[in-house]
Image 1 (cartoon, rainbow, N blue to C red):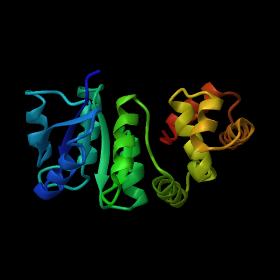
Image 2: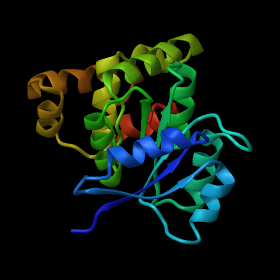
Image 3: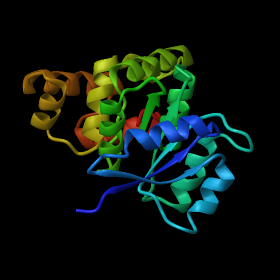
Image 4: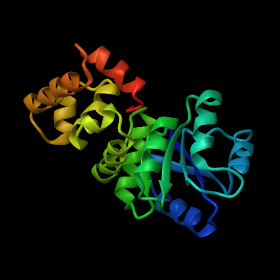
Length: 209
């Protein structure tokens, strides 16, 4: 089985080297390159296309979130994970809306980084409890429908949108299937929809997923 090809995009060389060393002995993940700007990231695509990109939010010559939005159209098969020091709900929401598959703070440990990369490679989104809380908190300030959803409901919603079954969601969140169904029903009531398909459609419209 081939390794997951990862590109690290950050303007700090020491940080890039640190990420490379984290995955040096990993059997499933390989850092195929580094880039110190959005431009050098785009240039690197001509040499080899990564599957997953770890990218910072703020860099000289272009920000990561705009780059994600652009690349989502040009390179739909590349999955981006924001890796930043910004523990700010506004950034989390912008990243999620631009198409990021995950958002991690730079103090994330090796296990979490590995999990996020693997989830993204499978086309699944990864936002841990802390990041989900930042997202929900920011949405509540926006004065729109999204603030009606709790942190746990948002986690369930992201997993539902990834096509996971009730049992799979229950296993991942360490809750019962009945609890997951309760969250699903509550979300449908809050967003005024009748079924899961409508729930996902409304969530996309509200930029929740």
